[in-house]
Structure formats: C-alpha cells, structure tokens
Image 1 (tube, rainbow, N blue to C red):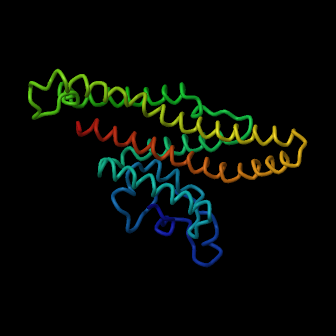
Image 2: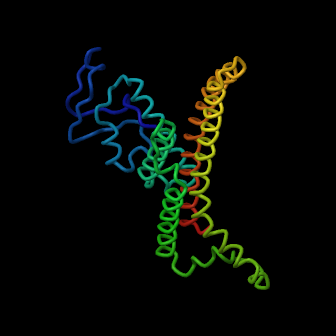
Image 3: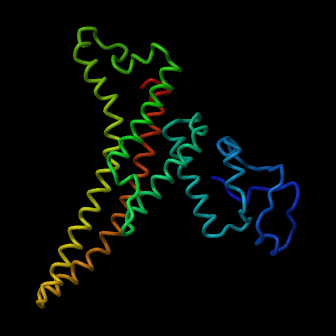
Length: 251
C-alpha cells in the first residue's frame, strides 16, 4: 500500500515537527524506498494520488491509502501480477459506482446505478469491450469459451449452447444484480416510510405509536442500505476483474 512515510523528495523536505505537518510539495522527481513492484506501476496515478499528501497522514489521507490498498489487493487477487496495470480502471470503477450507490440514498436524487436500464447498458459495454479485447488477443482460440478443451465431441450440441448463453448472460446479470439490489432497498424504505406516514395521519394513539416505530425503523434500514451500496460496488468491481482475467487466460 502506498504510504507517505515512504515517499521522499529530492528537494523540499526539511526536518522538524513543522515540516512533518506541512503538505508535501511535489517536484519533478519522486524517489520511493522499500516499495514493491505493484507500487511503481501506473506512475501517473501514483503521482496524482500523492499530491497534497503529508508525511504524517490525516484521516482523509489514511482513508485514501486504505482504499488504494483495498482495490490494489482486489486486482492482484483476481488478475495476478498483471492486474496492477488495470488498477486505475478498477479504482475508478469502484469509486464511481460506490459514490452513485450511496448518493442514491439522499432524498430526491436518482443516480444512474438505481436505473436498471443504465446498469445493464454499463455492464453490456464492459462485457463487449472485454470480448473484443479477448478476440484481439487470442484470435480463434476465443472459441474455447464455448467448447472447453478436452470435452467429448459428442457433447458439443449440448455444451456449446449452454456455454454461449452463460457467456453472454454476464452482460445482463452483472447490471441487473447491481440495479435490482439498490431498487429493492429503496422500495423497502419507501414502504416503511409511507406506512409510517399513514399511521401518523390516522390521528389515533396506536397510529402515532406505530408511526414513531416506523420512523425509528428507518435508521437501521438506512444503515443497512449504505452497507449494501458499498458491497454492491465491490461485487461489481470484483466480477469485472474476474471477467477480465477470463479474457486474458481463456478460462
């Protein structure tokens, strides 16, 4: 993981507590010590991420570094050593979807990830791009997706249609999973809030108690929805990197 305590500049750093608390002024040269291979790939993203960082990290900077390391580990786990070259893409995908998912919880705001048509369009575009990349790299070997090597020829009429449907259904399932989970959560919030409002409007003591309970129930449900929003962003990003690995290795 990127750590500012391991970034030293050729110019601009001085000693003392005051210099440690001051923002780092980037120069044209950055020297890293004790870094792994993964920390030197995508140098543009590394330099951009280091802008304004401090030697003693703030809470916001520590959160950025945690996010950096989390997505970096995800790429390494699903793509191996070659995964670091796709780190900027994975980081942008995760943060964009996560931001849209959480913003969807605000009143009167509707982000694209809540609309199933938009999520399916996004996932279809991703799968189409990965398919083109796979064909460009492996040429005719791409057909092994639909008929695994070593399988009996007699099973071809059964395996080819099943594998074809399985491959192209990724474009739909990836987007529907994201949009449907968010839509279901919003429907639960709407039902609870509407039911509580009707009970409060009834004017009875029982209705007032029920309305207060429904209103109180919205708090844990909103917390759960925030967790679901982040988890769905992670699942979308994880599956995308897995499909990218399939395109590289023809799994």
